[in-house]
Every structure is written in C-alpha cells, then in structure tokens.
Image (cartoon, rainbow, N blue to C red):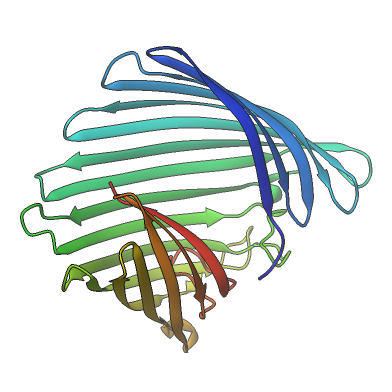
Length: 321
C-alpha cells in the first residue's frame, strides 16, 4: 500500500555448448526515488554433472526522480556450486560500486560486497539438513556513519516422510544482524536507521487430514535487540512471539483456498497484533501453484522484518520439488 516499485526485464539466452550458456539482459527499474536502465550479462558453465560455475556483470545509470542526480552503477559476481545425491553446496561473491552525484555537485562512492553460501544434506529419505550464511558490508566515501552491512545465518531441519507423507515439518534457527546504511529508505521513505540483532527459532507443521484438506501451524520466537543509535549503540529488548494457525482446502480440481489466523505478541513493548490472511490458489502442473490473497494484518511472518507495512493484496508463487 506504500510506495511504487517496478522492474521490466528483456533479454536473450543462448547455449554455446552442452556445458556452457550465456545471457544478456536490459532491466528498467523504477521506485519512488530512483529510475534507470541497467545492462547485465553472464556466463554459466557445467563442466561436470557435479560442478556448476557462473559469473555476471552489471552496469547502468540510475537517476533521482526529484533532484536529477545520477548514480553510476558497476557490479559483478561469481558463484560456484557442487552437488550429488545427498549433498548440495553453493557459494558466491558479489561486488557493486555506486558513484552517486551529491546535491552540491560532488560525487561519493559506495562499495558493497556480498558473500552467499547455501547447503543441503539429505541425511535419510525422510530427513534433510539445510543451512545458509549470507554476509554483506557496505563502505561509503562519506565516512563510517554512512556504512552498513548485515549477517544472516540459518540452520534448518526438515522432515518430509516418504512412506507416510501426510506430515511435513521444518524446524529452523536464524541469526540476524543488520546495520542499514544511512541513506537506505523503506517504502514510506523513512530512513531505517535502527540496528537489529536477533536470534529466532521457529517450528512449522502441516498435516494432510484428507487428500483435499490440510491443517497446520507455526510458532516462532524472536529474542531480539534494537538500537536507534548507529554510532553509540544502546540496545534494548525487542522480543516477539508469533502464532499462526493455517488450513488449506483443495476444491474442484486444481483450485485451493487458504486461510491463516495470526497473532504477534510483543512482550517487550506490552503490545500485540492479530488478524487473518486469505488466499486462493490455482495449481499449474504437479509442482507449482499461483495465488492471490489479502493480508488483513500489517506484520510479516518473518520475524527479522520489523516493519508494519504488509497490509494489503499479494501475489504468491509456490514451487514444491
């Protein structure tokens, strides 16, 4: 309900050989504050059945919609992946340099690095272990006050039984530390200057009562702290409990209705919020469904998200492999 964001992408992809392909894209992006055109190209290699490699390059210019100031962007990245029957691993490094024109006519540059790591281990046909570790930091020529960065680590344990597949479960632990850059804005054009440090544990369960009816629930707990001062950090508690009850009903042939009841309890603030979420989905093939719905609450079921701007319509794509 707040702000305007859009992306239009056009491009082409070609296969050079049985183990190599490349692509070229032109992307026009627009927000309330910036708009512009960027160009990207990349190469993907699969030298063996277990290894895959990739690289990307991105260049373009964004323009401030109010002042006309330009931001010249150069970015690049490499990634590597390895996988076989039980193990899948991938790592990547991305680099971005933004040269931004200031109101006084001078230029300031921001350098950003992002390190991404993902893994999955199939312990048994029923149990799998997943992990993720992302780390980013951003340096500005304007000084440390304008720097930023974040760290996100996830450990998950998923249960999807093969012989009795009515029950599905996911237990997950997340560590999240976020220092937004000074000039980072949310959808309401308010600077996200607070620093967040959170430990989050969650359990998500789904049980198929019949072939057309499923019930489930989610509980998540955040042991969090935030600081409103970026320089002299003074953290205060920001704990939260999230309760979700969910039911999915598949009617006709390829249609499904979903309903969630949500409660967010904020004991540190002596506050709570509650509401519902409704959605209607249509299955496309055996592994994907597309839906539209409405969130009557203003909070997210992702407890790392401290904003309250999620009220409204949404479109959702769900893929299960």
